[in-house]
Length: 172
Image (cartoon, rainbow, N blue to C red; front, side, top):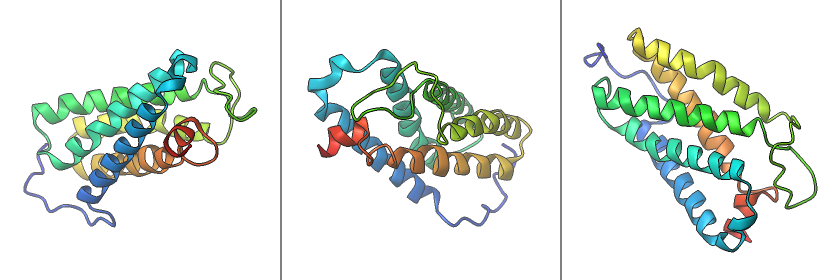
């Protein structure tokens, strides 16, 4: 991207802090998955796909935030990250929002407020790519950071409480 010599925009949270939070989330999710090994057989394929795509995006986030930007590697990894985020949002649209504790609810078509986040992801991802292709660095960076904070970190950390699968595996 053309703005390597431009100063970084003012940030409330540094890229290093977002990268560290992403690594913590990735570690917690991976630990939960490994601890839940005895229940792997009952987890529907949709949830495994969802976990694989979000783990991919979460693992790539620190790499994307801390590496040099604007080069071929950044663009290629960016497309992988965008694809992982899109697949994560798509799979989340197929989850059931409620039901009895322990109900994994795959393929139900039941909607909840959290699904608004998936729609937001579908709106933001094309804008992230478009801004990068147009070399609108500040807009691209703000949108990516918003996605990391909202759709990855906040939503990610809320997968552990409230009697949810990863929370049960990690803390149960």
